[in-house]
Length: 62
Image 1 (spheres, helix red, strand yellow):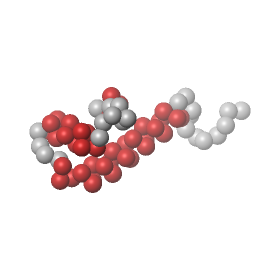
Image 2 (cartoon, one colour):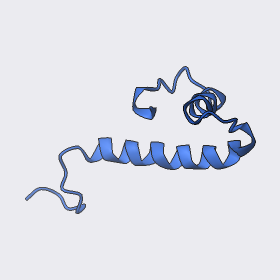
Image 3 (tube, helix red, strand yellow):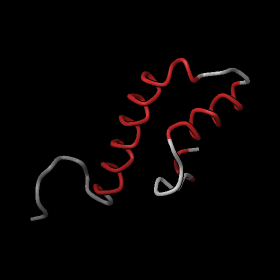
Image 4 (tube, one colour):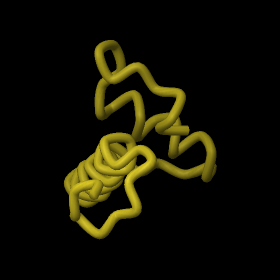
């Protein structure tokens, strides 16, 4: 779901509502926890995009 979200438009509340609809439950009371998880996932997605074709060892091409 996060790969399809436009973060320039969507709010945290929108994402929580979408997750709540998906799991058929109200998740607003877990907003802080969900925000922390989303931040971690987004950071990992960004890191993956920046790595691109890199083999992940941090060394420069020889």
